[in-house]
Length: 93
Image (cartoon, rainbow, N blue to C red):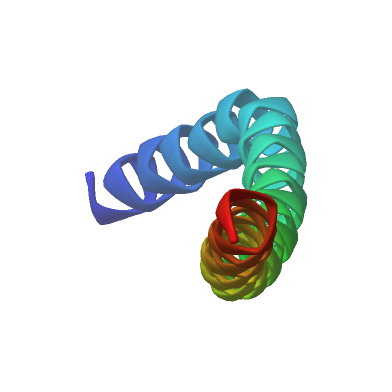
């Protein structure tokens, strides 16, 4: 009886190992692919974050340049106004 239980136990363990063998390979393969995909996704996220930071810096520089351009336009308009005023005073004299 004990021998029969041992033999049945050995057969059951062997059947379990045989049945799970290919599935474990599939599971391990899927796990490795998932890990590789996660690594790629993390690298893509880091690249996207770096691009966003560069875009923010470029936007700030553009805003500074636009502000400088607005000041230049204001100064040019003031100069034109002064020239017009000087011309009109010289013509009316």
